Image 1 (cartoon, one colour):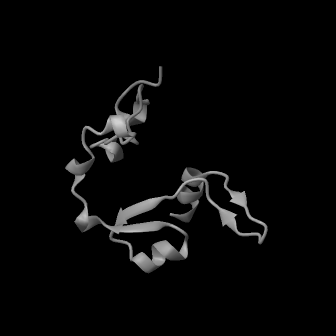
Image 2 (tube, rainbow, N blue to C red):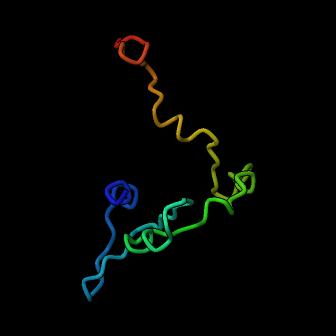
Length: 88
């Protein structure tokens, strides 16, 4: 999880005391304990408190809801043979 956080946050800035200031804040809506999220510098929200529809139709506010984000991570435009498609 920490490695993925680094990819999402990207390069931050280092202040005069040598503390990293990330360029973005990453908050997880998760069942992972809050203390663990804080330990690795991630925000935390209890996933049971999220109403996904609160984020729908808010593109004009800069908020985009992708209801099938987890599925879309694994869909390739052209699937390789091993995934039931063709490599071409």
